[in-house]
Image (cartoon, rainbow, N blue to C red; front, side):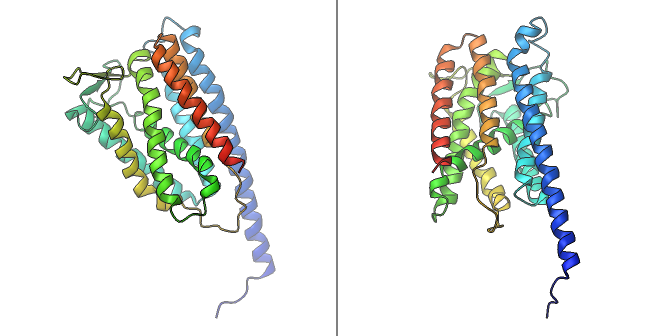
Length: 284
């Protein structure tokens, strides 16, 4: 028979939980502010240092690091740290594996290679920070879709809709990301194929593959991201939307700088539509 918890022990446990919550909240707020500052730097860097912007990409790398930390800290406020760490690790491993295979064989995204100026490279193929793109895009997109689906969060099919729509938003985010990374920043280059229609060099297979890989990753990490603390008040979590907005502003500004106007128009449509649906769902 379990003995009831002594008042002193219960008080100490509650104080420890409150201290942890306060620490994580303050640290998360700090990284959220840093993400916004670095996002502004990413947009303005080509104008601040035009002579080095073509090969000096540290603001974009810093944004990936800070945004991944921000998204992870946001989840750690709701979930055990071990679950969040495992989810990030799984996403990084899957992301790195498919990028290495893709750069070597052209499968599943289509033939491409990373820019030779991006050093160092893992196995002489992939910059080590590249898998962070998967963490930033998938985790922020999942947070946006959670807001969109908030009115239906208690339905039996909620989990399937969350995975499916997150994959769909990831595809749309890649539609915005690819012209920026390929033509504006020159992070990777698509090798021409016989496919007659491409989106700034990328075939439809690339975007379909992004959706499939995202679905596979979510199938593994979703059980780790389920919040089982039912007693906690369920309030909208806007910070992934903020990170996703920062990503879209960076890639849209880069596309505009490179005068990729069809990409800018599509980015704007995706940007406005997602924000409207997310805010509408969060206010339900």
